[in-house]
Length: 86
Length: 501
Ligand SMILES: [Fe+2]
Ligand SMILES: [Fe+2]
Image (cartoon, rainbow over all chains, first blue to last red; front, side, top):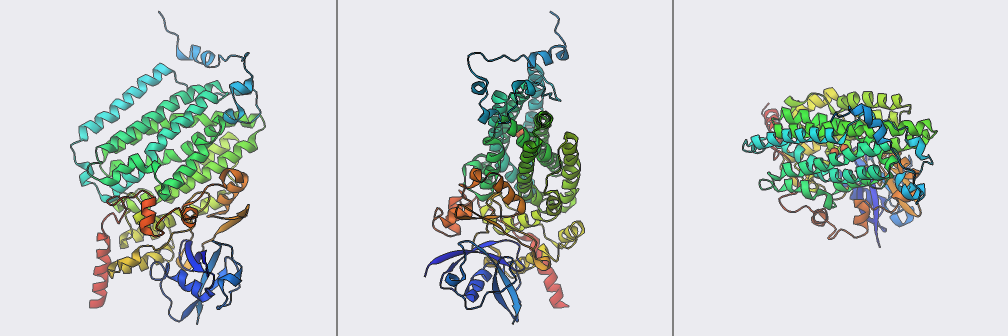
C-alpha cells in the first residue's frame, strides 16, 4: 500500500492530469480514479462502455485486474484511459 | 559653434574602441557574459545597426513620447472607462500588466548586459537606449494600473505577479530567465530582441493597442503604442549580430538560439494572447482570429525576417503551423477550467454566436473543443457548479511549464513526450519542448514544475486551498468567470424552448 502518482490521458479529454492512485489498485480502479477528473466535467459518460488502461501510445490494453505495483509503471508515467464497448 | 550632422560623426564615435593593455580581452569581455563564439573584437566592429540614434536625439524623442502617454492618462483619469469596461477587457488588462510590467524591468537588466559586455560597439550604443526604454516600460506599466488598485484587488497583480508561484508566472519566468536573464550578451540580442521582440511582442502590442482602442480604453491604447515605438527600435539589435555570426561561420549556433527562443515565445503567446483574441474580446470587436493574426504577423513577416537574414525556418515549422490553429484553444479551456488559479477573470466566449464564429475560423471546433464545452455548459445550466471546477492538477510541461494538451472530442489527439534523464522522468508537451531540453539538459534539469513541487510536498495542504495559497492568490483575487456565467442564460433559454417544443 503506497501512494503512486500517474498521469491520465483520458480519451476525449484535452489535457493530461495528475491522478494519485495506490500500488494495490487494479487497472479498473486506476481508470475509475482517472474518470473522476474527466467524465462529467469535460467528457460525456458513455453508457454501455467500460474504461480500460494502456501504456501511453500502446495499443495493448492492460489486464483489468492487474495491480499498479505489478504493472511496472514509473512514477508519473502517462497512461491512456480508453472507452471500450461492454 | 557649428554642430556636426549626426552622420558625420556617429560611425566614428561609436567605433572608437580601445585596445586593452592592462587586462586581457577575456578579462574585459568575459566569454560567459560576452558570448562564447570565439570571434575577435575586430569581427564585432562590423556590426552595423540599422537604426542610428544619438543620446540627445533619444532624450528629446522619449520626452515627447512620455508627455503624450501621460497626458492622455491624466485627461481621462475621471472618465470611468475602467468602471464601465466590459469585464472581458478588464481581464485583458490584468493579464497583460501582471505578465509584462515587471518583466520590463528584467528586460532592462538584459539590455544592460548587452550594453556592458557586447563586443560590438554599435550594439552597446543601441542597448544603452534599449535599457532606458525597458526602465520606462516598467515604470509606466506599474504607474498606469496603480490608479485602479483601490477599485479591484486583482490589479495588484501588476505589481506582485512576478513574486509569486502562480503557474502562469512560473511559465513566464522560466521562459524569460532562459532567454534573457541567463544568457550572454550576443545570445540575448538573438533570443530576446530578434526572436521574441521582432517575432512576437510587435504582435502583442500592435494587437492589444487595436483592441484597447476598440474597447474605448484610450489610455491603455496610447500607453501600448508608445511602448511599441521603443520596441520596434530596440528589437533591431539582434539582426546585425546574426549577420556577424553567419558571416563568420557561426550560423548553426545562431540558428539554434532562434529556434529555442521562438518556440518558447510561441507557447507563452498561445496562453496569453490566444485566449484574449479568440475568446475574451467581444465578438463585435474581433478583427481577425488569433490564427489569422499569427499567419499574417508571424508566419509571413517573421519567415521573411529569417530568410532575409540567411537563416533557415526553424526545423519544427510544420509543427508550429499546425499548432497555431490548435494549442491556444486548449490553453483557453485549461486556464478557464482552472480559473481559480488566475489573477484575472477569464471570459468563456462560448455563446452560440461565438461558437459559430469559432467554427467558421477553425472548422471542426464544435466536434473537438466544443465537445468539452458542451459538458461544461450543461453543468452550468444544471447548477452543477462543483463539476465545473477541477479537483486535480493538469500535468505541465517541464520546458514551457504549461499544461500538456492536445485536441479533444472526436478528433482526440493528446500526446505526452516523456524523457528519462538522470533517473528522473520528465514530461513535455511537444517534440519541440523536449528537443529544447535535450540541447542542454543540465541547464533545465534542476527546475521543478508546479506538479513536481506538488509531488515533492512543497504545496500544503495538498488541495485547491493549499495550491491557491502557494500561488499567492488571496481571497478577492482568485479568478472566476468574467461575466458571472450570464452568457449561459441563452443556453438555459434554448433548453426551455426545446422542452416546450
Ligand atoms: Fe519593453
Ligand atoms: Fe523590449
